Image (tube, rainbow, N blue to C red; front, side, top):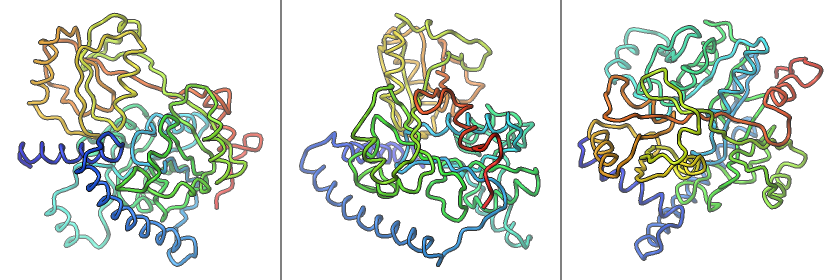
Amino acid sequence: MSSWLKKKSNALELYTIDVILGRRADTGAAIYGAFLQLLSYLFSGIAQLRFWLYRHRILHDQPLGCLVVVVGNLTVGGTGKTPVVEKFARALQDRGRRVAILSRGYKSKAPPVWKKWWWALTHAAEPPPRIVSDGKNVLLDSEQAGDEPYMLARNLPGVIVLVDKNRVKAGAFAIRKFGCDTLVLDDGFQYLPLKGQLNLLLVDKTNPFGNGHLLPRGILREPIKHLRRASYVFLTKSNGERDAELEALIQQHNPGVDVIECAHQPQYLQRFGTEERQPLSFLKGRRVLAFCGIATPESFEKFLRDLGAKIVARERYLDHYRYAEEDFVELTAMAQREGAECLVTTEKDAVRIPHTRAWGMPLYYLRLEINILQGASDFDEAVGRICFPQNGSRPPVT
């Protein structure tokens, strides 16, 4: 894609996001919003039909004979799934499970068409899933694997990480090749061919369901009433204060479901390309340029401000934005122009930056982890209660 076309595509996507979030109120936005609403009705019908077909067993899921834990949400982007998947996989591993994380590898670089054709001509079976980590080594980069699978592979030694759109095939491969007894489906709430014994639904407490519309007029992938499909609800980005209206809505659609509140907590600053770490106090009073390509840039910038950073400039890119050299040149020039002392980004963005690139000033990424606020004393207790409910016994496999 040419640079001009890429910028135009990004501009259209950003405009669409502004319309969805109600940031624009002009006539053009109203007309575009009405068009998106028509597409939303079509999307809703297709989604409802798909769920109906599986619910009435016209389409069948395929059990694999092991524990399947699904982590997902009702909305697109921004609920903070990756840190939850990471902590869950690590806690299960610590309890003796042989864990594989299955991801579709959103926006990863697919193999070239000629390779797919060559495989189809020379092999009877489908190609195996891409192995991001075999538990010992990280075998693919973020472009080949996708941002989240690469991050998980890098942060979880001993855990298998596989990428394939067909999670049934990937799960069977993990069991057969690596002896896995636990599969964690990253962003798998809408993946119906592989049924989870445990469905962990993440809800962003700061923006639970957007404007209430389904894609593309809103951010919902499926109707709010499908809260009923959750085994447990994790309220992410919580400040610890009760939201009676949200709690009532959850209980209305899923009476008695356990709700666990958690928050993403900054841990430290990691200097890009080095082993250097700085405490969070490093940001206090420091002039920084903040940039990121994530679904909710406001939350990242708020972390920096709350830690005392002076954001003298910021740059927001689309979620999963693939950086080019010209972006780095522009960021460095902006930082120097505004008198920034360093650049700060997210861990998810850092995996999309070439490690060999030299920067004219320090570049750090902010490391976040999940902390439980309500519903359990800590994450290990939550994992024990969810996955080993009866005095440490394992949940039944269905």
